Length: 320
Length: 263
Ligand SMILES: Cc1cc2nc3c(=O)[nH]c(=O)nc-3n(C[C@H](O)[C@H](O)[C@H](O)COP(=O)(O)OP(=O)(O)OC[C@H]3O[C@@H](n4cnc5c(N)ncnc54)[C@H](O)[C@@H]3O)c2cc1C
Ligand SMILES: Nc1ncnc2c1ncn2[C@@H]1O[C@H](COP(=O)(O)O)[C@@H](O)[C@H]1O
View 1 (tube, each protein chain N blue to C red):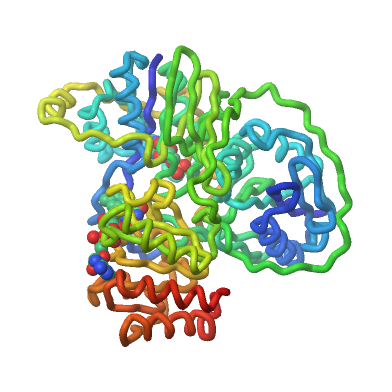
View 2 (view 1 turned 180 degrees about the vertical axis):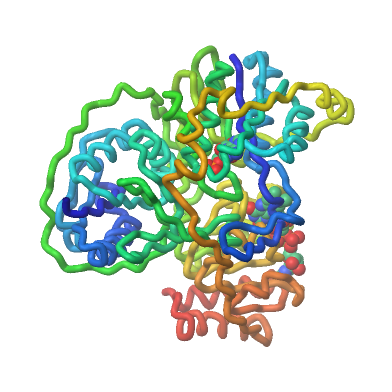
């Protein structure tokens, strides 16, 4: 039987999310190395033109309820059996994090979560993922006939194939008699910016901000000027300067931006655990011995209350 | 309603991880173990349900060796009633699904109707075991929950949703809920409670006691195998910028644009 890689593409207002296009870009590379074909699946209507232009030859448009765990599990299961896929890729979003382990147990398929790299070695897929909060990396192999992988956003560069529109195959899985957990209400996140886990730029503040007022007056406007998402250390969150959803680190969010600016953050091992894979790290700290400097691409030893406004002006000029 | 809490011990979060010579695991010789931080929220949530008279009993479930008992005692001192520790040489090397099978069998045997887990164990960082348990038991699930209420046979939970949003979901028990930071503030154990916890029972069960086929768990049954561990590559040495605030700010933005090419 011919091999098939299936990419679960999440959509937003009908269009595939950037994370889905990233996965198709990577999927194409894996498909070439495995001699496999590449398909996509969506829950709801498919944008066959965009998905095709990133290399999907077929898109499975599955009817189902993307707002419930059971709906997602049933839909992906339906697309897996319709496509005969042996490799299934999804972005490690809240939705996949919730549904994929359940799917794994349902169909007996091994699951590797939060991968930061996927490669083909001797005809097999080898995944790499951070464990111990990124203090170690594990190479992982799946031994079941079907393998499921979720990958961290921003892990793979986007590359379009310029392919023709994908062929659309409609799939209507039988509604499962599974559990009924109902969505009652969506609570919008506090800011209107991109979530930390998907953000390409982050400006974080620490305990040194000293109050919520100063956090709001210094970190948030600097983040806005850099078109970045604001983040915080646990010390800042626990002191009430920022919300739990803003925390970066081992017991907060693990982030993977291209630019991470740490303002008055010491660089404790639990904070580093959440942001050490950032491509470029900038540290502003008045203590030259602060551990964060050992990880910074650029360091500024100074009072953040002087540097942040100057930096804000420069970002405003540069990003007009 | 009986509440079960799945509790695991993990290396303390400030541990410097060292990889063993074979590259197959970490050196644990001098590692200090702690309760998985997210499991502490689960213990606290269970204790609060008991105080609200919604839970009749809180049972801790730990898959792990005898060394984990000090973490179990700590949970007993914070309010749990008793514990079941799952231990058998056949369990070694289980992947997430294997662990879920073992825990599910133990939870079923105790007739648990609400299972509280941590959102992830901070060693595996898998965030998989809770939803796998839910599927194996046919229970409802809510992942990464930072607000929970239980009323009669129903629950309401705020779970993580896409793009940093949260969602309110409701469902019927039995259910598995994985607990996130923000759910509550775990209490400290008082000295009298620490003393009292020494007398609370910890039962140890093996595969036979759970009625598990040893071939369905452990390394032999693992679908997911870690073949090699490495340390993350070091970062190239950085550069310290010199000058007054206006100078360093201008230089930084120029470097970010022209050298690092990230803006
Ligand atoms: C189980 C556990 C889990 C944890 N999880 C996390 C986590 O997920 N995320 C996390 O961040 N932490 C976490 N921590 C906490 C972590 O150990 C540190 O305590 C925390 O990261 C410190 O935050 P901070 O850097 O803001 O504060 P501090 O360590 O107090 O550092 C403040 C820094 O600001 C500098 N500073 C002060 N004033 C100024 C100024 N005016 N200008 C410039 N610099 C200034 C100081 O030199 C200092 O380096 C965890 C801890 C434990 C035990
Ligand atoms: N060995 C174990 N013993 C008890 N509970 C566990 C064990 N492993 C995982 N769990 C539970 O499952 C949660 C998620 O673990 P993981 O899927 O490994 O990230 C943990 O926070 C625990 O609540």
